[in-house]
Length: 223
Image (cartoon, rainbow, N blue to C red; front, side, top):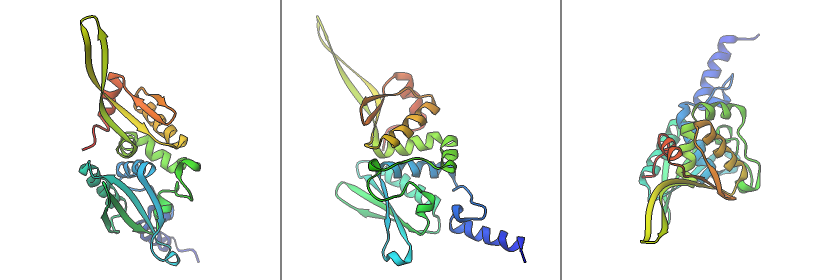
């Protein structure tokens, strides 16, 4: 006999384990933290088998450069927010720190996981992820630029009759070998109203003053 109350209780228990395993499936919360973590994962993250394959446990690893300790703090906070029942750890490396978290549910939460390097396979958002990214475009852009992007001062020399003149202006760059991930970055910048162009085949540049000012509202320099 069908028991609606039992199904509802089971759905709540599943939601505590994984929102995508709940009945019906739910969206990861908080969505802003999820969008940020998704951006970090697409740039500098990977998912691999954690320990004994028979146990079905996976580990999410995101590599944070030690030059920006604030990035590590934000990464740890996002992982903890999405998997509050799982421990988030840090493993020092050479010039970077590996932030990692074990869970059975990372492939459910980050379905872009697959064999091989990201730029050698298709990377696209599933519909429920696209819903989150559409609502949290700023957080997603922040994750992308915090992983494979930067904000820096570009110095330009102008030769004049009176001598060379130098001036500097801020700009953003996002570099990735995956055409799909570059496309996601470009779509997100379009949604935010940020003018951009390809400066190289694998690099997105945001250089216009008003575009940099707009992206500053969501990203800003790494720290």
